[in-house]
Image 1 (spheres, rainbow, N blue to C red):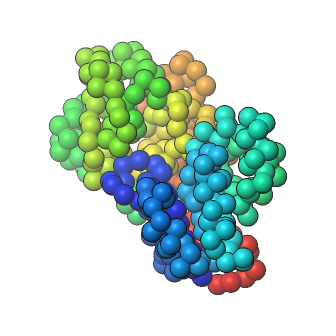
Image 2 (image 1 turned 90 degrees about the vertical axis):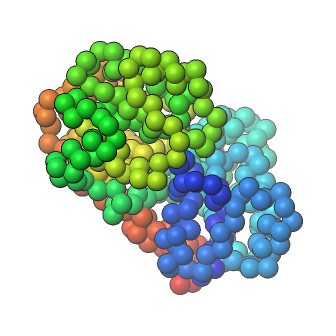
Length: 335
């Protein structure tokens, strides 16, 4: 089967959209003839020439379902064969505000792809209100790269990154901006004296340097820049914390932490509650008090941690197999 995959494909894989798109290209490429299409070139005639010349069986767009995304897929449909199927992965909550506009809903209803894949119950409700066919599917996680390590390796990694072996490391990976909910991590740093908050900041988007400096002044460690061995930071950590902020429905970093079998304390994102059950080291916090309480519980070794077991069904191989089955059903059984 010929599959065109549209998404962000240039630069380092230090951001969720970029990482998810690259992995779909990689793993689906083992099963199909995949044409990667970098969305950065979507305004170029060459981009559209590729779509027309390759004439794929399926075109799959990894995007926030904005009005322009629906418009782009309408263009894909116009240039493709009449039997080409068009799929959208709605990976970002931007759609929630866009689809509440009645004018946008009316326009989008005339530009529907054959299927929209999402991770959010609320997004599914709004998308179905436009007449869309919707299916739930998580993105995957590399369970070979992200894996637990023994205590001795954890100590070695602490030394490598010059972290105190006698404190508990609370890790967060994401953008260093106030709208990412990092105030919750700051509160943990201030109220849990035996803990060290470590924030790995992505360089892909603009960051607030003043805010990063403030976090450092308050005792947090903020590492900025691309880290090509990011799995080691998860492996040395004692707990992963993801506060509420503007983010994906299903934060990829939460899944990476779970694959390393460390405890996770997360905000109640749709994707978390849709695909995973709480317990065995996975906590969903709905208040500042719950964050502190759950973190303390994990550090006191008051829980049995089996987060890796929860995320294994979301390995990239399994997700790619499921996506392949979806393509085959849409295309009437084309292998």
